[in-house]
Image 1 (cartoon, rainbow, N blue to C red):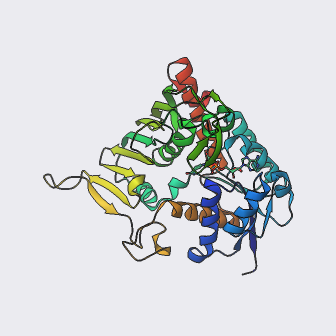
Image 2 (cartoon, protein in one colour):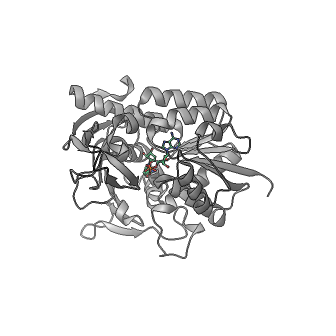
Image 3 (cartoon, helix red, strand yellow):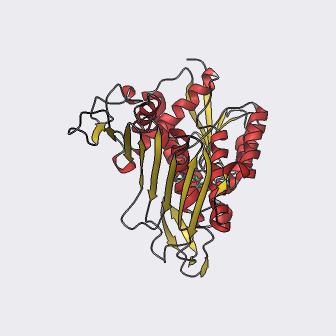
Length: 387
Ligand SMILES: NC(=O)c1ccc[n+]([C@@H]2O[C@H](COP(=O)([O-])OP(=O)(O)OC[C@H]3O[C@@H](n4cnc5c(N)ncnc54)[C@H](O)[C@@H]3O)[C@@H](O)[C@H]2O)c1
């Protein structure tokens, strides 16, 4: 092995850890032609980023992303900072000739996403956006089954992404509730994943009809946030929530199918419940992230009287990505999706192949999110192509 692909990662908290873990596991389970190296990690606070570098196995760290993207000993920039800095970092990385992996949503809005896409295309670097659920083996199997025609003509996509971590009105005003930093609320945080899965499995959106609501309009200011937990700053007062607490929308797909998506962080009892059902003329598929190793399949070609949803345990060596892991029945989890997405990205860099989901997909998702917001604000169906 001669080639080295050296990664510089911006962000060291929730996604920073998920991606660092994936990079550490990658070569062990999915050997590639190149050695993938955790080279440097970046955050704004020197003490914390130094600690993250030690804990996640990076030999060096930076406190300024501009220094990181300019370093000669980095080949790939991974962006796991909030959406408000994706544009600058991704464009800066591309201008320095680095391949770019960026967390979702690609940008705060469609114009920013277009700018990012133009920059990576101009630089001729590889780009991928972090829609990691595409890389769950059950989702990959669903894609194969749809392509094989097992569902026939698709009529319906029905998706929900439900969490409850901000339902307490005293939960502080974290960056996810600030439009300037996050772009939108449950729509961009959660809905973006379902938009990507719906595009991946069913196809392009023609138009959307949306509704949004913010239930809690003011919250205590935040002192510290870790993962999805946060502590309020008791002395600092309160600030305004500037994003949606719930978004619902209808979808008219190009292929003629219809769909609906609900995204909210106000669904008490649901911690991270992304689920969807797809109904076609020959069958249906059901998936829930809380049962990530399972896919439910209704086959209308089964004999009458014996039909019914059946459970496929997606843990066999013949299922997507499973060949590299454990013996059949030894289940995978959330973190494995990150290993798979990095594997595909590295292979695309090595072979010159296409990346998917690319920044083009990231930009199209932003277009749909913006169309939903426009529809919610103005009323009526909004053509995605008009954004
Ligand atoms: N794919 C997924 O399932 C998934 C899950 C959660 C979050 N995300 C996305 O990942 C991104 C980060 O979310 P998170 O939950 O990891 O956030 P987080 O708050 O846990 O971590 C953000 C990190 O970004 C760093 N950061 C912020 N501004 C910076 C700057 N100017 N320069 C350098 N570093 C900076 C912070 O120091 C921190 O390390 C967001 O775009 C979010 O939408 C994706």
